[in-house]
Length: 59
Image (cartoon, rainbow, N blue to C red; front, side, top):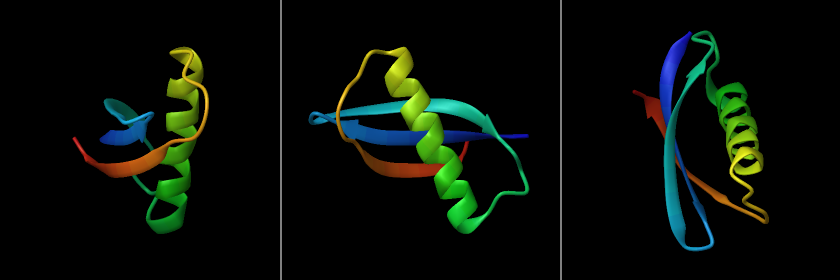
């Protein structure tokens, strides 16, 4: 597992968090995993609606 910093914007507020992601994911699979982590984060923090994924990279 590698730690990735994931950033997204929701209702004009930027959120950033760090999450462990499998190290063998690349390209579309990595982006999809990060989007799933954003959806989980939003559910855990009671954020509803759409978001814009703004960044992801190794932490």
